[in-house]
Length: 119
Image 1 (cartoon, rainbow, N blue to C red):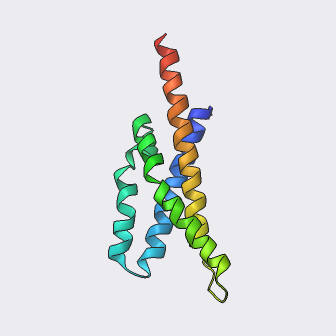
Image 2 (cartoon, rainbow, N blue to C red):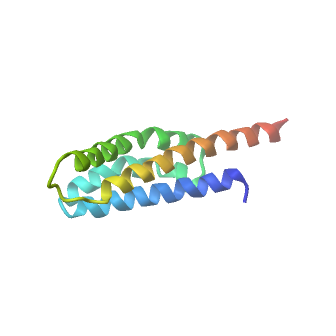
C-alpha cells in the first residue's frame, strides 16, 4: 500500500467515525438536528469514499466546523465542574483532525502522481 491509498483509507475511516458519532450522539436528542448536522458531511462524501481529489479538498474544508465544535465542547467539559463527561466531543475532534489531514495529504499526493504520470 502506498501513501496515497493509505491516506485515502484514513480519510474514509475519519469520515465514517465522524458521521457515526454525529448521528449516534445527536439521535439521542433530536433526530432532525442529527440529520441536519450530518448533511454537510453527506454532501462531501464523494471525496473520501471515491478518492476524488477535489472532493477530498472540499471534505477537508467542510470538516473544520466539526473540529471547532469538538474542541469547544471538550474544553467546556474540562472547565465546568460537575458536568457529566462524554466521549463524543473527543471523538468528533479526533476524527475531524484525521479526516482533514488525510484528505489534504491524499489530494496533494494524488495530484502529484497524476502530474508525474503526465510527464
